[in-house]
Image (cartoon, rainbow, N blue to C red; front, side, top):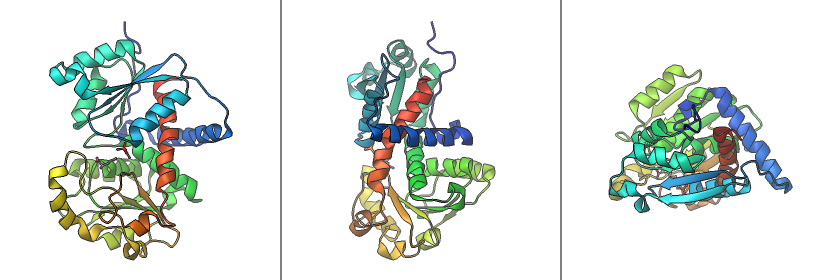
Length: 310
Ligand code: CP
Ligand code: NVA
């Protein structure tokens, strides 16, 4: 017996239409106010989600756990090293078995093909909690944070991405395309975003998504500046080589001076002070990173509600 004939998976931003993205962000803003009011809201009583994580996590793990518990549901953390997956049990078998016990599955792993395969065989929603290619929940809570800080419509803003053309950058590229805001990326040569993801997004976008090797050009007149680590999880062995190549891409006071005077700085965290971002900027008045981290929990509640049909 299938639990749901059509589970709502969320594996990449492009799985959502623009009105669904806006719905989730607006819902997260409402759920945040409800949480701050102290009023209990427990639509997930009797539901259980699994968190299957193959990489470390502080924010995504704990914010999904807190979100589900606050919604009245339960969580089981599934470290991949403790599952039979580790001994070669196929993903398709794991997905079908977990679907019989759980109501949703959040996955953090390496290849996007892993979440695709789990989703293909799951009768329950599969949510991408970060892969090498995408970090789709992250970017929705990042945009929620932008909306809290900026009076203008997101389409009126210029967003800059400075650094590696990585998983988080890919999700920003897809979000810019869906919502139609200007995104300027500055990446070192050889560290650009995936060409297919970029060109598909550019083709479908109503606003410019540009790529340069000059961080000053990307940040010029920006309302929002994004930083992320230079070496992502799984790239630790490249870290020292990347430190040299990425050095001109640090977000520091000199670079920030090129942006609008009221620009905000985002970093999905964890941050490496003195590498992709200076201590002064991370701790300075333009940084909104702690609100950004909090918003992951509210956004995850909205995603869980939507995915499980609560
Ligand atoms: N931003 C983010 O995904 O952080 P974690 O790796 O701690 O989950
Ligand atoms: N690009 C980073 C994001 C961490 C939340 C990584 O994949 O390690």
